[in-house]
Image (cartoon, rainbow, N blue to C red):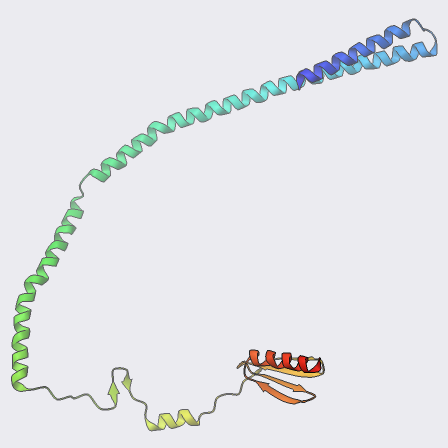
Length: 222
């Protein structure tokens, strides 16, 4: 970029010098003054472009220096973090390899708990066998559970069943109404649909039945 700017400045300077040289022979005529003035303007433009080129070169060098400093700082930070990370890893590994006395005690207690039920099982089995023999001699115990009870609780009484049968279900509520093609449609909360058309009133249990009715109606009109 800087090289192109310098070349442009040289071209402007050469053009300005040539224009001024050609105008010297024509002074003090109008064309001579025009040539000299154009040459001066070109020379001034060359100086300005040259200054811009110098500024661009300096900015490029400054940017490169900043990038190098940032890269060096990153490398230094990585170098400092490396030993610390290694030390932390070694400390974690050493802590993991050290035996934990509390964990050993817990493991031993759990092992004893596993063995203890086996030791207690032998007397319990003997007592269970003795109880079974005694029950076989004495006979089965009477069933004290009432007839109207089961695992789920009491069975419903006749009054409860009659009240449940006599209690009517609440009627479905109207949730939507619209009109289309001279027909009125009403949609209820239980999913049923009622239609009032010129042919009569209809009631549909599901939306699928209602759609089939519309298809058949449109087909018959077509």
